Length: 299
Ligand code: DGY
Image (tube, rainbow, N blue to C red; front, side, top):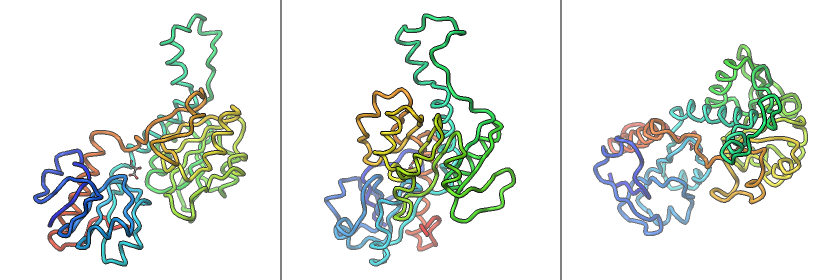
């Protein structure tokens, strides 16, 4: 089965593919049956270039760039990579939480710039408590649940919001607005869909407590980014952000702010997890080639 990819994916599994061509999406191909194109929008215009296509194997769990309806209409199946990046992404969310609350990046810069000239008892860098504070998780799927487990190790009280509440011992369900009002830290773990776009609106951001921290490792467009920038510029809240609306661009105003920790969409970026994601992509491609059921078709 001829596979067309816009890049080689990391890890050994990739070498199991027999018939794969790497190239630019715009060139198109009549004989290609499966497509791997990380970060590319797959819509009718792209599908027109690959008339024999049967599978789009999305590299990542979030597949909002793939027009699944357009694919279905042409008999093209879509797969993603759920399950293998939950721990890694939850680790990053917790790292951002700690970094923002304890002002780690600022403190590091303080030392490196030679500005550290005081005793520890007159510190310029007082952070906010993590242990024992209240964490609100928006979207209690696999990654949100992995974050909740990490939070328990820090004696945090954990609130969560999701469409359908679940019976999870130790976790307290809250309506979204109540969760935002009650939490010291809010971490977002919802998928980006037409319904969740802008979920954390300007009005909802205003519900956050003074001194609260917002962590986003999901998708930038879940939050009203302009309103978030205004809140951060005012200094009322802090944030740890791995995702942005127009990646790799981000609002200029964020760059000079001390109260936001910024990372370049690295939630799943470990050697092990990226190789595991490739494994899932390749297993789906091989299953399609053999005419077997796909491992992780998108719902
Ligand atoms: C995903 O899988 O959707 C991630 O954003 C990539 O880390």
